[in-house]
Image (cartoon, rainbow over all chains, first blue to last red; front, side, top):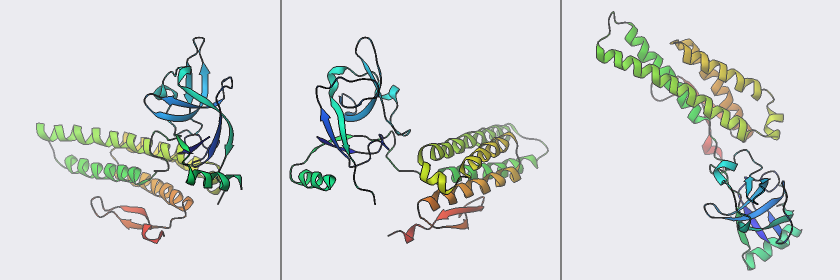
Length: 92
Length: 169
């Protein structure tokens, strides 16, 4: 389990949400994943595409997120897990 | 309830954090950059108007003329960028429901900025300022911040909509 900091995945994941990870789940386009990125550190993003060679492109749900181009191609080896449950902070 | 429980657990045994940060620090939006851009355009038009009073321009004055026109163009583009970022990234459904006019206003600002760039016309830049001020007023209202109008404390001394920030607790 981990806690999200920031709103680049809003409205799916808002700042402070707790995330439950599954480390062996098969990923697919649209999955929300936890990645250990060499430049950006531990990030949570959505899988935008998976190439034949197993490289991923990622994007944030919020338009203000860093872009797919900025994140660059991601190696599957950087994957920590897939988000299977999001517990958002109560509203108000 | 589950969230509260997890928060207590997090306090005792810090849960690993994962970044979902944006390209700019989240939630930092302010229409003042756009307002300063249009004030700059008005000031540049004033300086260009001063040059037009002369019968003939020296080489130095010609160089100044080119620079003023170029800066006016650049600030027009900067204004467009600042407005579209706030419109595209900050305004979401709750703000759109509150001010449905924002789409039309943003489009009008784009057209007015183009007109102000194309001509050396003070009236056009002032019309642009009125629209950008309205944009700022809407922006601050969606954040629950009151606004007031005052003349900028520097040339061109034009009316600008400012937030009343000292009322925020």
